[in-house]
Image (cartoon, rainbow, N blue to C red; front, top):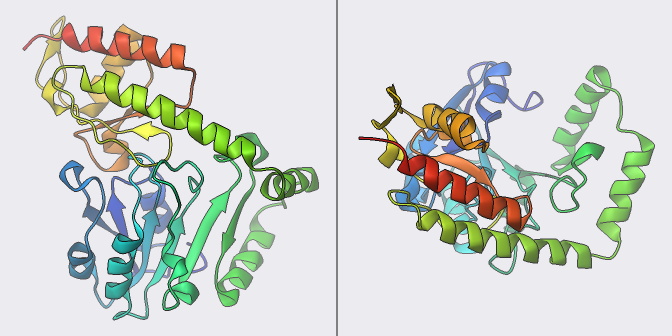
Length: 291
C-alpha cells in the first residue's frame, strides 16, 4: 500500500472488510472508499456498485476472496464482470488478498489475475499461515508487476529485517511438498462449517449466509439489538459480543470492526466439541435476553 498510494489517492474497499484495510490506506494518507456488500448480496459487490464508486482519484481496488470475515467467494463470472469495469479505468490497480485460497468449499479458487487484461494490474497477496497452519512462521508473499515489487522490496529493506531463513525454508517445503494435508484440512473445515451454519440457523432470530470459503461465519444478529439482560441493553454488535464473552464465556468479534454492525464473526477453526458447546452457550445466552 505504501508503495502504491499517495496522498489523496482513493482506494475502493468492499465491506465487510478485514479490520486493518482502512487504516492501511489512511496511514498512506489515502482515502478509503467503502462499498457496502451486505447480507442480501451474499457479501459481494456488483459491477454496477464498483462503477459508481470509481472517480478520477481512484488508484486501487482491494478485494478479499475467500473473505475474512464473511467467507464469501467470488466466482469467475463475478470477477470477470468486475474486470470489465476496470478495463475502462487503466489507472486502477487491484490488490487481491487471497490468503484463504485453499480453504474453499466450492471446488476451486478463482483470481482476477487470471484474465489477460488484469494480470499486469493485479497484486496477489498470499502466504502460508492459513492453508498450512503456519501462522507463527510469519511468511507472506505477493505476485505483482516488477516495478511494484522493486518498490516494495526497497521499502521493506529500509523498514524491517528479513524473514528468517528457517521460516523461508519451511514455507518452501509447505508450498512444494505433498498437498494432501491441505485437502484433509479443507475437508475438516467444510464439515465444521456445515455444522456451525446448521447450529446458528437453529438459534431463533439469527440469519446466516452459508460461506463458500475461509473459516468464519458472519451471522446477522440485529434481532437481539434493543434487548436487555439485568438492565443492560444490547445496542450494537460490540455490546452483544461483550455480553456473550461475559455471560456465555465465548469469544466472537463485533461486526462493526469489519464495517457491518448488523453482524458478528464466529470462527470455526477449532474442534467440533468446542464448537458444539459454544453454539449451545450462545443459544442459551441469547434466549436469556429480554425485550
